[in-house]
Image (tube, rainbow, N blue to C red):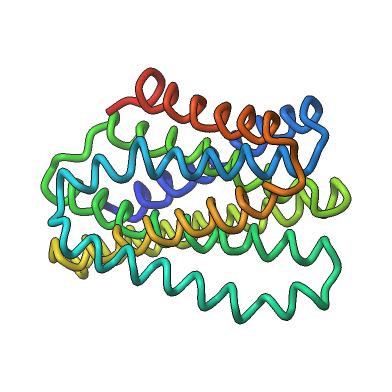
Length: 246
C-alpha cells in the first residue's frame, strides 16, 4: 500500500468517526438524560464486541491465547481505573466523564491497531478490495457514535465538539501508524495479532460494562435501563447483519 492510499484510508476512517458524531448529536436532541446516553453508548460498544469482534476473532485465532489476552486487557483497564479513581473523586463531574471517554478512546485505538495491520497485509498480498475498505470505514460510525454520546454531556457544546475532534484525530493517527507498521511487515505473526485482538476485547468490555453501563445503572429505573441497553444492542445487531458489508 503506497503512502497516498494510507492517507486516504485514514481520512476515510476519520470521516466514519465524524459521521458517528453527527448521528450522536442528533440523538442528543431526543435523549436528554445523561445516564440514558451512557447506557446506550456502552451497549453499542458491548454489542460490537458481542456480535462482531468475538465471532470474527474466534474464527481466526486460537481461543487459549485469546482468553489470556482478554484477561490481560481486563486487568490493564482495571489498574488504570484504580489509578484514576482518586483523581475522579477530586475532579469535577466534567473531568470524570472525560476520563470515561478517554478510556473508551484508548480501548478503540487498541482494537483498531490490528485492523490497520490486517489491511496493510491484505494490500501487500493484493487482497485489499474496495468492499473491505468500505466495511472498515462503516465500522467506524458506531465507534464515533459511542465516543460522542459518552462525551456530549461533559460540558458545553463547544467543549464536547473540540474534545470529540481531538479524540477522532488521535484515532485516525493511530490507525495510520498501524498501516505503516503493517506495511513494514512488523507484527505479522498471527500470535501477536491474536494478543492485540484479545487485549482489545478485554479493554472494550471493561470500558463498556464497568465505565459506561454499570456506572449509570443506579441512576436509572430498571425499565429505562433495560430499554436503552436493549436499544444499543439491537442497533449494533441490525448494523452488523444488515448494514455492514462483509
